[in-house]
Image (cartoon, rainbow, N blue to C red):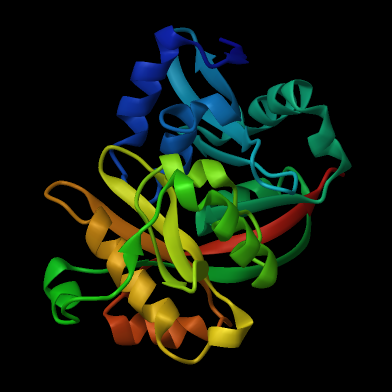
Length: 262
């Protein structure tokens, strides 16, 4: 029976979300793209008859071409990519950024040409480890701080920041003389997990523990019964040692890679 691909619709969304929710950390990004971030994504779904085979998606709010996917059958990947490229022709111009678990990265290497890549750790923390750090002085931020947050993002060369992140989950920061000088925020969240990110400190205020304080505060704000935060950190990033000191441990290792169409 042939594989058919179609844009995500409401009829398929529930079944797809239910399948992706079985691996809440590994599939957090695909799951968010079909639920909370669906408004900002192109999503295509693969079927064989009535059986769901997988999905592929591209997120609008990143400044670079990007995609992610999840499949039950590797045979679905090629038609999913073709369907996504029809929906988002700009992907073919590349380079296409991906952040994938190792086996999905390997599957994509069989379809596209790998340009460059490096390991990135998916890190989680338990409530007990987080509680050991006590109170923080970071304060909640909201839409009223959008301009100040954008100025900090520009000064800190923070890529991928968009003020709509203020609607995706907790955002916290340090304010000095009406300027936000450090921040951490929620990249996205699903029903069971949040990715913590957008950690930035103004160059004039670094090495004072502000970034660590904001990371602790936003993690605590995201941690509630049945819901768990995590963060991603490149293997060579000096912040990796900081996150480990804060109590984060590596759950999985993904590949952050750039691909080109053959």
